[in-house]
Each structure stands twice: as C-alpha cells, then as structure tokens.
Image 1 (cartoon, rainbow, N blue to C red):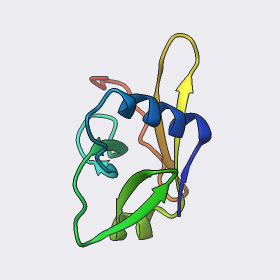
Image 2: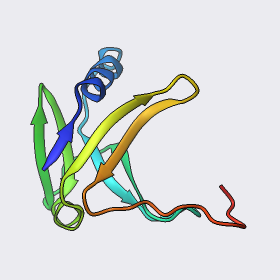
Image 3: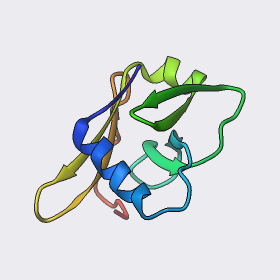
Length: 104
C-alpha cells in the first residue's frame, strides 16, 4: 500500500502547476551513499513490473517487488523551518545511520 499525505500531495500539485505535462512519480530504492539504501522519489515512466496508484489526478509508481519487500510506504512532506522536502518511509525499512568516519 502507498500512502501520500495531504501536505505531500499538495506540494506535488503545486510543482506540476508550472509544468506543461504531469509525469508519474516513482518511489524507488537508491542503493548508493554512505548512509546505506534509502527510499527516494523521481519522475519516471511506467514499466510492466510497476504497481500503479492514482491519487487525486496524480500517478505514483512502485516496483511490485519493492512494494512486497518494504510493506506499507508513506510519502510525506517535512517543513521544520531549517529544512524542507519530501520524506519516504516504509514499514519494513530502517535507514542506516551514519557512524564514525562517515562521509555524510
């Protein structure tokens, strides 16, 4: 299951207001970085192995295998004053924490 918070949905709609067309938003696992694998967002085209979610006129894509491994995925928008942006979390994914000597 994919959950998009109201604030995240509003921010996506705001972004697409200034675009000529609306592309699907993909949730994917980014394997790089010293913090370990993390869930990320990108604009992408639909593929055969995708689970497709339509939410208030926007299309979200998640690879079926990733969805099965991660369980429920939640997309939110965080704005705490000093930083803002989209946050993606999943029931079966705990992001790695940077330790000593990390390049983060």
